[in-house]
Length: 147
Picture 1 (cartoon, rainbow, N blue to C red):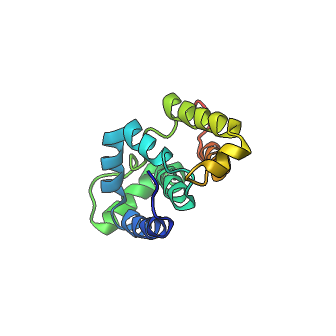
Picture 2 (spheres, rainbow, N blue to C red):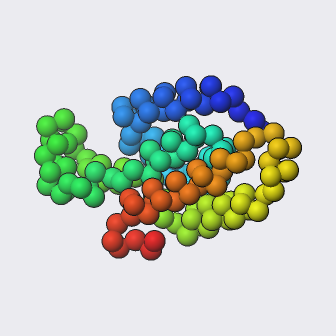
């Protein structure tokens, strides 16, 4: 299904604001749907705004950069008792998610120029967006990850 490029741009901006304001709630909801929501995003990976939203979801949790003591101090200052160390999409480095990215990259790379012209969506951007997304995932991976 083809989505309006302009509306997806607005979606990216609104998502960015919501993500800043209530990151934990969004992450919790997305983690409940896990791979299913990842599949839905991948269906629209040809759109730059969708790729940008996916990259925001892949941002590392704060505790990767700050110690737990520093996070607890920040939470105490804000009046929060719980730690937000788990506020990250937990399906980022799952083997199935990475396999889905690789499969889509391979299949989109095989598509001929003629098929791209006939296609109703800008599939020429798919390999570029997937490659950028994979490089981003690798760059955000911790030393103990499987990547």
